[in-house]
Picture 1 (cartoon, each protein chain N blue to C red):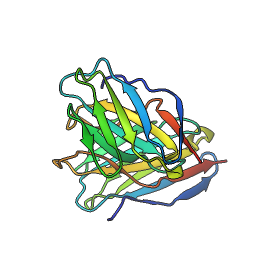
Picture 2 (cartoon, rainbow over the protein chains, first blue to last red):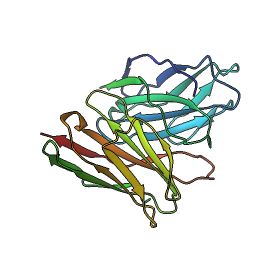
Picture 3 (cartoon, rainbow over the protein chains, first blue to last red):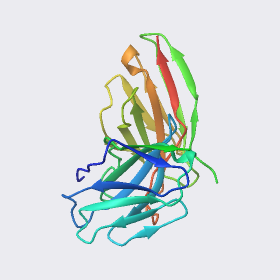
Length: 112
Length: 114
């Protein structure tokens, strides 16, 4: 799986958009970008994933650059409950094992 | 919607004792994963099962074993417990062939070894 780089921490004001960047410059053509988050001591939670097109669901939007070397997860109106560690994971779906490799992540603190 | 169920939620054991953690996947999910998360660390993959067969193995100690049963639930057996085994243990499940191929995590079992 391709290596990813995320800032270790970010702050965001409640009600504002939170934009979490991820660099994955060595991503290969068949690798998807997945985002998970972990609220303190809870099980990681799937947020969104994409290959090359921008994606949106009820939780967030995912913007992937045209060269696919970086992406941004957008929480449009952050709430205090969005305070969590956000993991960007690049991987090939359906590959052998399919385990997730969590590394680093961004600790997002949403402040009132 | 049904989620992944793990039991027990909390467990306290002495060194050298054994522990069994249980995981009940989301209905119709055929793959189960186990992860360990030590204090201040990221979750680390231990082992996974697909259709009751071990599908992959990560950094699981030899003292640990696991299996998946015919009803797809899984158990992680831990023997000769050490202080360093104190951690959160997460189970995740997935349905192969689904459109998202995503893993859904349970709430975890917090194991404390004294």
